[in-house]
Length: 446
Image 1 (tube, rainbow, N blue to C red):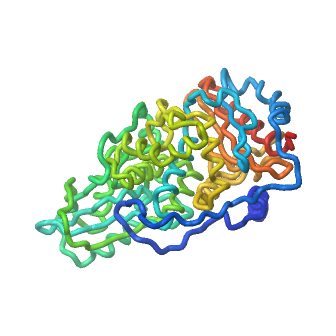
Image 2: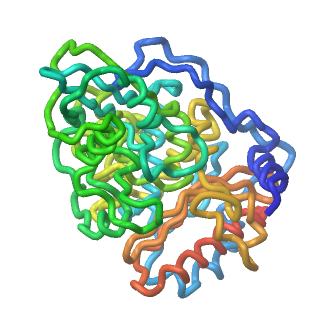
Image 3: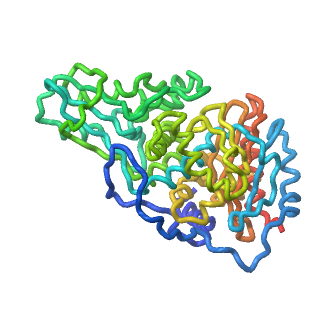
């Protein structure tokens, strides 16, 4: 696919509103953790104008268009489906939409919405080095898993680098490196997480201090570090030519020797969605908890997310019971989410410019992120570039949720979750979901 084709496809989805793709400026606050802003709520500009001049999709039209594809055996034993007119909020087709399904990584959409609702878009996460006692320096984690070390992930955005942190400490006599990962508390592994998630490279134990997301290799699917904070300390120690690394805590008011800052919150949301980055999702969930004055734990991030988004679901007459999450990444098989809840939240993306980073972070069908290699073959290739959606995959679950513009120009929010898939049927389920999304893109559905 040529780069210009991707740009054209994006403009088609945006309906000509190119400003929806936001690359944030490099200024920022550099806070080690974040608190809610007390500033008045700004006026929000819709990303999408109301569509006029063509007939809107109807329930009957959509049911006819999707009927055959919904019988696809690749979808497994059951499907939860919700399709919404994103401009009017009208439900167009819902199948078991109020049944709580296992969302897998489509839960990251909920996390992204909570982050963008309660945190400043230009805020950054800081990793610092402060003075300790008796020649110690303390490496203080600020909850930035993108801090780059030996095994950095290449590509946008440019992240903070451990080597830059070390360069600021040059000239200071150092005897030991102390690692302080106390910003996050509670269990390091989420409810129901498998040990294989760490050994297979899906996620690192959740820590406020890590480099490269806890990776131990630049290769994919390699084990993550069992103790990301100590590994970060060891890498800093090697740069400072120090051999001793211990765990501890910075003293209150300790003199700051060095600081590096993450990309902006908007950029972190974008990359979290595009790459389906589990470590980043959990870190951002913890910062939502801290902003709400709650512990930076799994329970805290879930409670803070429900508190932030619950009023929106109440207003949409879905209720907070639609969010039954146990983590921020979607890795837990104990997560539950109603498709009807997710589509109503997705509809907000086109109505409020605050959520533009979520739109630009959703993978584009056939072009980037977790959808780069999908929508490449007939019949779903007709939707390449026209669908922006988050994927979700766990044992027995395949999901696709996002936004699509129909042939008649109307914007739909959709959640398609097949949660009765056989262990060997993942690829077939993904192909069936892609075909469903392609029908949404190609039909007028009137």
